[in-house]
Amino acid sequence: MSLLGRSREELAACLVEAGEPAWRGRQLAQAIYRQRIQSVEEITTFSKELRERIQRLGWEVGLPRIAQVFTSVDGTERYLIGGRGVEGRTTDGLASSDTVETVWMPEGDDGEAGDGSDEENATNDRIEKSWQRATICVSSQVGCAVNCQFCLTAKLGLQRNLSAGEIAGQVVAVLDRQSVEIGRDRVNLVFMGMGEPFLNYDNFMAAVRLLVEEVGLSPQRMTVSTSGIVPGIQRFAGEPAEVRPKLAISLNAPNDAVRSQIMPINRKWPIEAVVDAVRVVKLRPRERITFEYVLLAGITDKPEHAREVARLVRRSGLPAKVNLIAWNPGPGIPYAMPEAAAVDEFRRSLAGEGVPVYMRRPRGRDIYAACGQLKRTVEG
Ligand code: SF4
Image 1 (tube, helix red, strand yellow):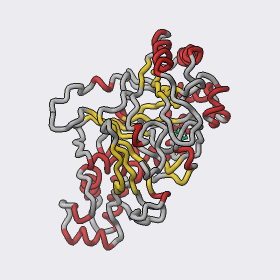
Image 2 (cartoon, rainbow, N blue to C red; image 1 turned 90 degrees about the vertical axis):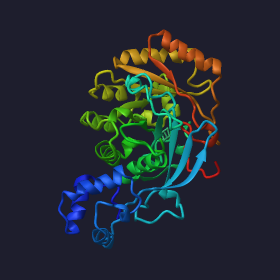
Image 3 (cartoon, rainbow, N blue to C red; image 1 turned 30 degrees about the horizontal axis):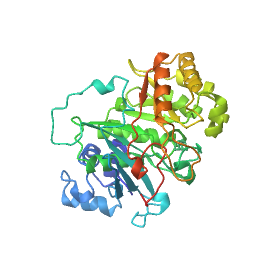
Image 4 (spheres, rainbow, N blue to C red; image 1 turned 90 degrees about the horizontal axis):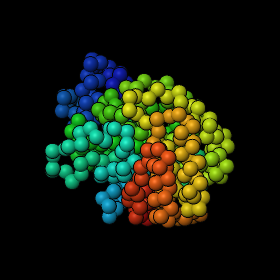
């Protein structure tokens, strides 16, 4: 039974079961989420006898294991992370349903810019680390059921949901590997890895609460991207600001006709329904909704598309920005990368229409770590 993934109250209940007072739950949470211990023996605030008692009751830390690392020429690292199987199996054999992918991007991919948060702490006087800020891209499911036609993860289909511990555990494992100091280092999280977070809503939000309340990360440094799951957006709108990440909508097309072609989910929840749901989210001062937009050559990258997207954003009335992503190729996906000139014209056209627009730098393309490329590939 894993301790990681449990709230402080749940950890306190585990200790009460072991005959200890509930307040020790705080010590246990501290050891798991702040000190990032690997095993119960490392809990220095507990006596040896108590550690043994906890183990006898069947508890272990359950920190996911980084089973494989692929390193890009640009410094990005893609991890194959072995969590716990649904039945609690260990993952040494790396059964497909037990592994997910998580990406570490030192210096981010510029997708976080434009909402004001990047200006905070812009001066980092520490020089011992090779990065000044970093972004972790986190998975929420093994595979995905949404079936976006341009995405490699879609090829896996949905294998299973990740638990809250497996989602938060990816972050804890990467923070540990990179020796991140919470409160000093600038780390952003994007829930844009494998899976649709809003189709695993309860576990996703439970993980966010752990990351905020126990790990100590700010929800304003987290962004969740959805393909437009309207009931999920409606629930998300009801989350308190203290634990609500920023919201990104994976738009990717200028209108319903094109979007339904490349994102079948659009037939169920068309653009207008998604925008209506987003309007209910109560934004913080200076917060903006992000529209992610993948440029596919000849399909979504034409000049008239840019004008349509600008109209769509303006019509929404939302404080919004557009993140452009030049499509990253993947084997077996029948699309082409846009020409650099088309990308540039698209960006200038949006900017000319007064829409805040940013280009996501492709990170880790050579190791299939870039947007839409995550698939449990060991071939690298
Ligand atoms: S783009 Fe996201 S929502 Fe769409 S298939 Fe890929 S992982 Fe799923």
